[in-house]
Image (cartoon, rainbow, N blue to C red; front, side, top):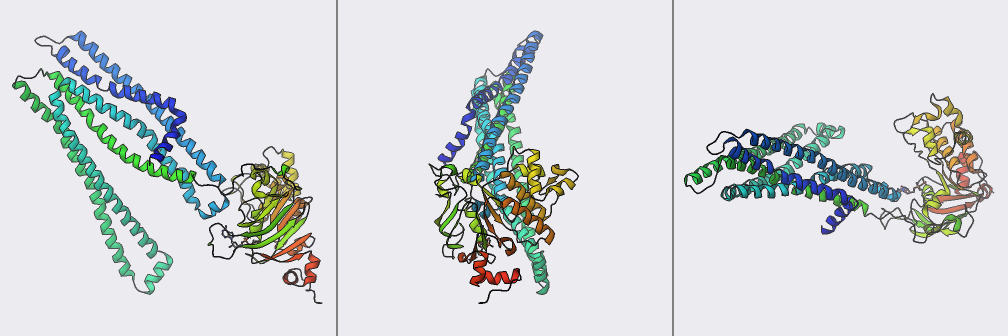
Length: 594
Ligand code: ADP
């Protein structure tokens, strides 16, 4: 906990200057708050009702002007203070949000497959947002309230210490009542929340298609309704109790608040009659005014205590994310690809075994002893049944995942010893799912190379067989695509993805052929685009249509995470194994019988 507090405080360190100024202003304005009541005393005693004389108008005017000036000054200080605190609070949470965002971006792909998107978004939005509102208020609230309480107490003692004692005795009672009520309300709130989720659960289970079907077929509707009714009654009772516990409290507070001055009057009268006081009318008015300022800060402080607890929980959640260690980080002395010993474009898998990070250790590995090499400029294809691990092999090259055992080498160096950004720069990936941002086509293309010229965009798109489609759109390259934008067909999206890789112009191409059926025309267009982009590059393809890989330099057949056959198309046909079987189905070429 102390550790947590230290970390939270360190977040504020860059802004200590502003914070210091803020604190100063808070202290000054809280302290100034007691001045007007003291002026009130003089207004009554020296200006309005000077002993045995008529009101002194000159002094009265000065005192009133002074009071108004003080109110103006306090108001101005308040505005300044609000501005400062909200700036600091938002700067701190802004920093935190960016840090969290950057950190999460570094997390490996596995983190995102494990974590629900909603949860990540909630941490960035709600948790950081929640902290923001607490930060801005807490900081000044504590300081301001403490100073107000102290200043008021000092002023009260200065006016009359005996009245102060009586007034102060009553305060703890109020605070205690407030505390007790808060506890009760928190408990009721918890119960209400539980009962509410129970109600929701019943609704969800019962009023869904399967739930209704089940209830109808077993004739259980009456029973379900009874369950719902009983939980609903609990809910009503809790809600009313919650509302009433608050009302009861406010009633008590109001009575006590109103009673304190009344009791003060009584005591003052008694003191005056006893002749043991220098109490004046002005002193009594000033005293009750100051005393009334005491309650709110005390209640405010109690609320802050609650806020701080809540924000600690939020901070803990945020730090939990910041403390996650990304699985893929650069080794201390990572080299660039250019410094690697082997030729660029060379990919080598050496006895690779792989399990997805969240898989049970007892489950069979997804890849088991996979070894092969792709020489620069070669075209190597992976074929095999769906789920055999082909896409997984591709994801190991740019370190979307790291191998469990064995190693993946690029340019003669273990990929774990290379600077990750340098490795990724060398690899272009076209995956089955093409993701386009909600942005214009041009912006989506420039994601690969922000400085690309319009002419280069057009060249890439022409090569990827998509230029003629884009110019057909009303807004051409400025057409907004993606989530809520213009919907491109699967084949068009893939060709845009290919154009994007052409713009990136990497020496290595990892191609995951889409399994989704394209019609023959768009398949032809996509294939031509792929041939264009693959030209002159080292290419590792996951192929589903064997027609596209007949000319591949090497074909590996993957089954259950192992390479079961390797060779050129002709060699594999001659082998008359799995590949030949697949080919006879797809290419209408009779399997070799010899
Ligand atoms: P292929 O490309 O040959 O169809 P994949 O490499 O996509 O096969 O998948 C191989 C196996 O790994 C499948 O059984 C699949 O369920 C599993 N798998 C794929 N992605 C993940 C993931 N992110 N987390 C856990 N298991 C996965």
